[in-house]
Length: 295
Image 1 (tube, rainbow, N blue to C red):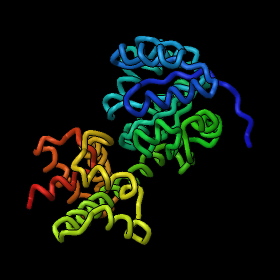
Image 2 (cartoon, helix red, strand yellow):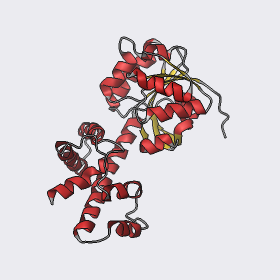
Image 3 (cartoon, rainbow, N blue to C red):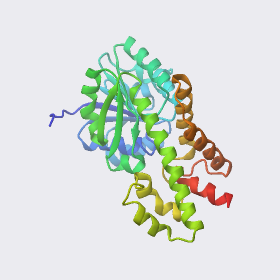
Image 4 (cartoon, one colour):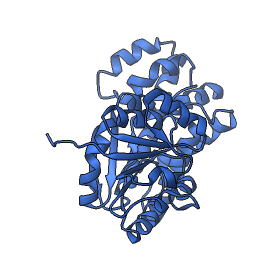
């Protein structure tokens, strides 16, 4: 096993994923400085884990060997990296930015080019595994970037990763995450239809899942979501609003590269229906609620 050394790390963005991820870095012995747009959340993190906080990305990044970002979307990432008080302005030459946000490959390439001009390494490293994965240090991390930058960053990322792999050059992490979201969209719709069909047929949904989950129909979504789906509980997990943001990236990229995503495009519209139902913050498994509403 590779010997791990402690590093000086800045973590920017303490949402439902970033908060526990930064905590795992501190627990692993790294020196951690945090930044969050809502300062009270950074204050709560420091109270829980220790470490320090700064009120701008630039100040948080000063002197850090690695700067981790986990924010909302393309615009948020641009601002936190290259805004007036952005992280790039505080990073030293030779430092590496590791971006865990799910964003477009275009903004990834643009920001990596800016970073390179300042002698800063860049690894795009979107994550999968949900809030539970972040809390349990069991995330799948798919990375793009130069071999040397990835090799330096991987032992730090390991604090919250179940698996971490370099998929190729800059942007390869983001395109791999798109594959992840494309697969999930179809899986959740299929699971929703199966449970809706079971309920309509008068079957015991839990009994159905107990049987079919042991065969070819089994999936992470089925194992982790069927109980809350059957209980009509959706105030948890990965929000529909965020899934539609991700699927828009997938569909736009598909147009650029000439890929066909008919099922993904259809499920995206189903999520639009869920938003119209007031479910923008519901978990993505709420596709079942849409089917129930249709009768």
